[in-house]
Image (cartoon, rainbow, N blue to C red):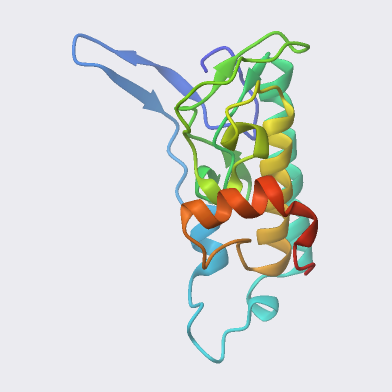
Length: 178
């Protein structure tokens, strides 16, 4: 990730040796997930009053700018979700956590594997079905992130992994619209 330098991506300063480690930029204000879901159980704190439309749109644009830079570098993020979108003290959003990222030619796909990795609520159908993966797996996750940012809820939040996989792979058109 040291090759991708963009204001909407957490900077990687380098690797540590002999003990493996990565030196990353400090992003002070936590994840977008924490910002969206904090005080969720408090009656007085509705999502709409805590989180302005202007902020929601700004965060989504920053996330998309960061993801575009990743894709332009020939990579798939692979775990694009609000927990991996960090907010700086200046209110800018930065894409983080490239542990599941994959390098590919912009027009190629990565063959499917037998192992499913990622967070089920944000995972594209082709990942769940071990089908070849291209840039569109991140775009599916963008849709889930947009849903979460705009509504304050996560699709499939009350389902287990098996139920989520069934819904996404077999009943995607039955989604309750926000």
